[in-house]
Length: 393
Image (cartoon, rainbow, N blue to C red; front, side, top):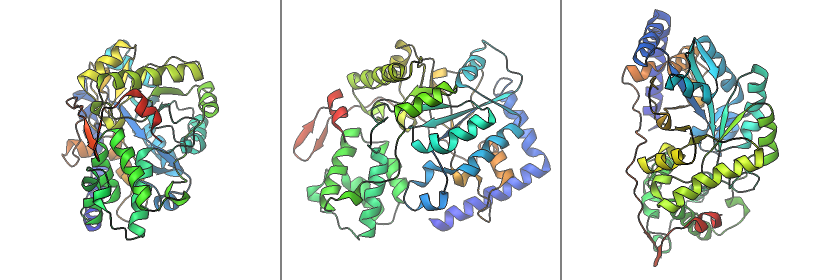
């Protein structure tokens, strides 16, 4: 797996050099501009901006991380590539035809409200005068809780370190689907987690966390120190400086796996909480895991939202649906050249979507059939309600 990743990186870095220095990158950007209806609207997504990428890499999900220095360079690269760094509202207005943009647009977004964004991204954005929006899962803001994906990653790494042999009979039925590929070496922890979280609702994740903690003997070292979340004072401070905030559910919930009443509660209550705490109007939403359905879009529209962002790495088009906005999710390795150092040509080609045009990237569709199913955990049939989400640790 590691060899294949290195080879893919080398191929992309080499291709980026050719595209950049030959002028083909600029031609491809012009083609994308025409294809998109006259203006490119690039929306990029980040999670955690950290001061020590190498150190944090040893204990956190790699795909959520970007160093402070690389993040700054991304902003500079976007500007150099001809993008105007603007707000989500401006982008939606241009897409709808309510206003005409003089330049291509780039919108900076953050998912989850990690405190790293407040510590390391916010000062850079403020210094450079660049707007951004952060999507908040409001039940976590101002608490010491950690997201299920961070807790599971931490537990699974601890399990590997301890050469853990699971007692599957004492674990929820779905555990084999998660643990099997990891313990057999078929998938990395982060890859297995990404696949699993997209298929199983919150209640399954929390049940596996509880069972794994019990089998591993409990203790404070089973709870990740990293991954802390902003508090409301930090959110308000950013809002006073003009930074925007959108809703991202209450409990970081993949809504396409939940029943109607949970979808309604997660969307409406997350919106109301931000508005009450920060004193702003919330009109924008980010789908957890990037997954959405017609049912979820209907709820957003009925509650006054103007946009919903996915994680589909595709171009946005003038006249497109504001509730299926496409985003490019970026992290540190998107900018690493053949020698493992920062590559300006590679970053530029990523932002200009050269690899998408060449068929070298394969976007994952976010639209899903809304599939709620009752889940058997042990001998208990779970029928989720909004209360069960609030009780999740």
